[in-house]
Amino acid sequence: FDYAGKMEFDIGYTRRDLMQIKAAKNDLVVYIITGENEKDIVKQFRKIIGRSYIPPFWAFGYGQSRWGYKTEQDIREVAKRYQAAGIPLDSIYLDIDYMERYKDFTVDTERFPNLKALAEDMKQQGIHLVPIIDAGVKIEKDYDVYEEGVQNNYFCKNAEGGDFVGAVWPGRVHFPDFLQPDARKWFGKKYAVLTEQGIDGFWNDMNEPASFRGPLPDDVVFPGDDMPRQHKEVHNVFGHLMAKATYEGIKKNSGKRPFVITRACYSGTQKYSTAWTGDNQSIWAHLKLSIPQLLNLGMSGMPFVGTDIGGFGSNTNPELLSRWIQASCFAPLFRNHCAKFSRCQEPWQFDKQTLDIYRTYVRLRYRFIPYLYDLFYEESRTGMPIIRPLVMHYQRDPEVRECNDEYLVGDRILVAPVTDQGVHVKAVYLPQGTWIDYWTKERISGGKYILRDAPIDVCPIYIKGDSIIPAWPQLDHIPDGGSEELILEYYPASADSSKYVHYQDNGADFAYEAGEYNLYRFRADKDGELSVSMEHEGYEHHYETLRVEVY
Ligand code: GLC
Image (cartoon, rainbow, N blue to C red; front, side, top):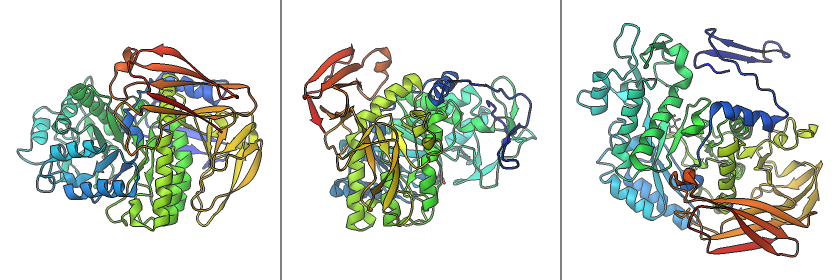
């Protein structure tokens, strides 16, 4: 259903056997996709909504965030603590307190006296800063963003024709009319204030748009480019168009692959941004929910998604945080974030066991980044999500139809996280075929449930027999251009040999679109022979070392 306005979904709520979808106006576009199976439908859907792009390498790393980091010192401290803990880190997010009184595209120079130097220092340590930008622009005389917006009629209007006033962190605000191409260009250019200081990732927030005065009235007017529209007709695309403005602005300013994270999105936002699932709570129900949420988003064309690890609101605890990092270690977007009024939830705030568990799973994530990157290459061409419900690959198996507590990473890794408090054993369903327990290397034939011991430090993970999986050696950060060494984990089972196609590019800009990438075809034999051929050779850099580990 392609409709940017108000809709109502009643899925088996009023009547169990009925799905009712209502749109406020009758100009919604309905696509009916018929397909052979889930994969086919997802691929066809992607053809309608358009392609995605391969995010920059560093975006695959781990990020730490907290609404409450107030000063440059806080940020330096986070970097230091991660380094001391031996936990890889590639980004630190700057929530609203870095701004001068919550004004977009400003920096509080008392608390951040030299953002440029900070960004540089952090980059030296392999860390990217990702500041937040809110949708609402503070109403304040002589504030350039406000003045320019008013002068050029870039803001949404109230029914009387004046600029509409909402309320967000800075107090009274106007909202840009992102339906206007000129307003998008203008807002997109503003990010230069920060890209010029060495920032290359942004976090767009409150862009539903959200106002503390409640939902925007239906009759708020978006003047747009061709004809004015009312809020009730275009609400759903506000965040999407803000992401587009950001993406295009950064791309123009830097030429690099943008990293944008947005709270609101629509079908098509995968072309511009990642998304996170908004303000969850530090409760077990939200950890459990995160799996179907991310899988559904992936199948719905948003592959690069994640949840606030540990939970945003209320207080997390060692057990919940440990299970959350395990469940999320293959989530495409990998960020710990929490609210100002919640207990601090960086891993070192807890006991040694929690820190050790955290380290293990963040390192595991980094080990498999080349695999995730390959999946993104596939995703950008076919629309196949990175993490997938089992039903996408085993659609004839009735056991997996309603499986919401396991997922596949590509088609070779199966993750079965524990998402219940106090539980130390997991009933894992393994589909047909041979599966290898990642931790014990035990071989199990599938098509059945197994009970796997899952003490607090174990997230059950299985590798599909006969897989080759690319991996990196242990790294503290994602190096520019990726690792010099590539490891191939090979898990022979029943076949005499296995094949794998691996993608490599510079991880930074769009040169890959002009063919600057390599595709390696690996073939491993049971006797340990590895052969490599180049399916495409367009990127001058090659690995220095290839190492095969046979399990
Ligand atoms: C919103 C965001 C949250 C952020 C907070 C303060 O609630 O969803 O992630 O920390 O605003 O900016």
